[in-house]
Length: 157
Image 1 (cartoon, rainbow, N blue to C red):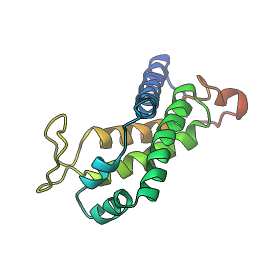
Image 2 (cartoon, helix red, strand yellow):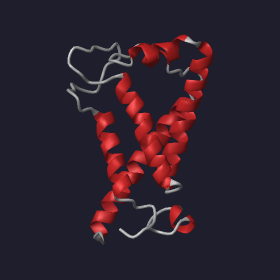
Image 3 (cartoon, rainbow, N blue to C red):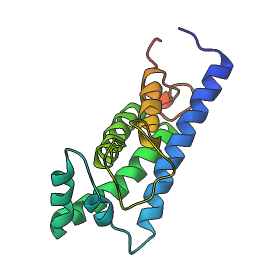
């Protein structure tokens, strides 16, 4: 199916915004020598609370988790932003954001030490970004506007 120019522009804008957001989050963590995910992991609630607390409770595992979080955000964000290995980056972004969502699910009865940007019930900004990445997976733009255009043959829509 052929998309209009405006559909392409809005999909590209969505891809650039999400890519920049994830890239910047990773760079902000990288440039802060005191950053660690320990407090966020210890504040987890929901059915995976024990898993996140286990990661936070082991210094060696926490070091690996922090490293993977920082560099995962940077690689995923950069890939989405410039359109390089975009489908892999989008899937990795969905997985990473799903781990964030499951760490702090916006469910009834769960309370967190960290303040949120609003009041949520099931749907929060993380879930919305996951859904937006799913849209980008379904309607890719990297074959028109991205480095993937020069690496891969564009699939028929």
